[in-house]
Image (cartoon, rainbow, N blue to C red; front, side, top):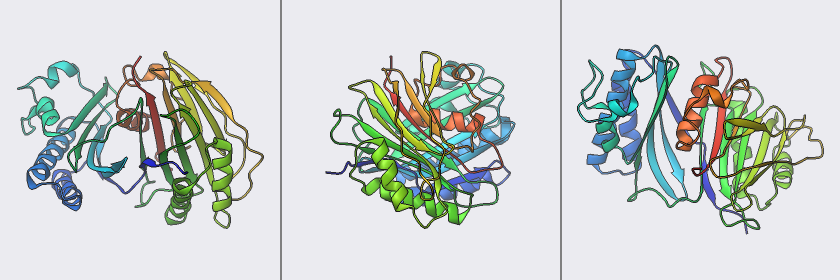
Length: 345
């Protein structure tokens, strides 16, 4: 029996900070929310939240973007709104979250009220470097039940393109611990529509696959990508019952486990899935409670260190993915990241 899809990349709308940001964000989030048949009261809450995010970016951030998308997890769907900026950061997050505190010139509802508007709200800030906010509005009566490992990911197309050649997906897996998950990170060669087509095909094969080991899944997707331009690809199995992660990869995908302030790398072998794949090898690392697995394409620099992100890795996986991408992405390529967080220490 094949595993069930947990989450995967979908359409992502990146809106750069400019004078029309608030209006564009309200319009886009309204379309996404109504597309999920959210009640009008919930649509209005999402529109108010993104308007405040946009206003704060324009008034106080050095530079930034809003990211709007529909996320699907275990059969449930939500509209998710992310705000990413390049600084200056929030001086005192607990104070900013208290009622009555808002940035001068904003709508005045403050972070605390934004948190009440959303079903799920999160914030992570790095002084002088940037802040990420996340707000999620669930359809169908609320969030799905989650296991001990939370997952999320994010993609960003290269400038000038509407689609991204990077993609990710997560599914359950049989034959291992009850909460074991398989994660895929794919970087279609090049960028634009042709690279996106490769990434979509990899996600389709991964979603429909029956194999349970990373090496077998990698080989299966390799066969499914024959005749395409190929991709860098990595498959990870996280098993919280064994507290281990196993990874098989081909090409330039960075994969590492962050635990206790240190990072342990998991190697990918040279090769191109769909074109030339050497015999897959599997590498392992501990994955204790409190650890995070981070997998990303070469659209992000691999020079970052856990110490660069104080307080980040115990957070919601979407904040981890967004903040690492926010700080490490390079402007001249597609960027993609997927994250698994094993609860809290």
